[in-house]
Length: 326
Ligand SMILES: [Mn+2]
Image (tube, rainbow, N blue to C red; front, side, top):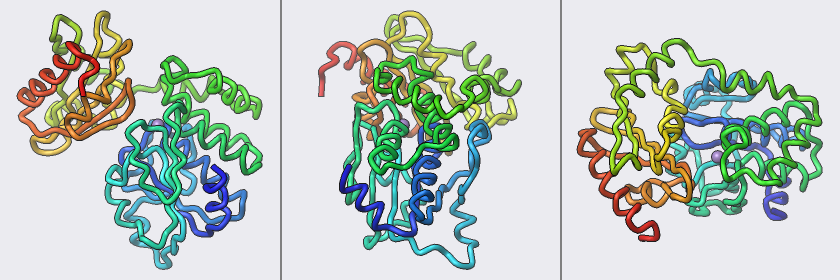
């Protein structure tokens, strides 16, 4: 932590980035770090290959620069320091990885168990519920006051990564931090309605279709679904609309493990895993070269979907038979 603070104080032009398809924790943490850096008189740029997701627009797009926009900049910033948040390995940065240079100081702030400590400085704490918690510590350590903007950003980060303070990663420390954030006067009712109660009719129709076609296996211990591109086309929805669907699968009684295959290329799928109880889906995702957290992980897999699902089911069966396998 001390070394990270020193490295931040040394830097001037900061590249801030997170994993592809960034969600609440990534974006909240990026914004929080941006406010911290601005307070310290630094020049931060948040760079992402993705557009700012509309469903998170309770947060400001402040400073959000897409790779395309960066490409078109006449005077490109000369980054001397890069802060990566919520990203277990540089590959997950997608095309932003191409901006990293060996002479940049690389600061890795994360809470994934699978983090490979790829930074010059690694502020990695897998007991933190969200990167937002680690950002909060950074504000405290650097004695930067937390205003309502930063509080909003960190609140969204922690709320989304803890499933609204329901998941096991939520600690007394989490609640203490959030109590401090609420003291800044942020309107948590408004924030939560914006985050969780704004599904479009199309998204709900897509969800209805998925729920109607759920697959149950291994005596109901595993539930899974496939979302194909043509279904998205038919329902006029997109990948971002599928965000959070996996939690409906996990909510089925008796389920230990849930997964969804989402087609994101010809015969290529992104797999989201969720676990219930003591199960650890990070162990299953790792078998396929992915990773994440105990209760929430992901990987990529090649199709066809049915065969891919059967491969995952085989690993899930082995795991449930012997949860300590390695
Ligand atoms: Mn996170």
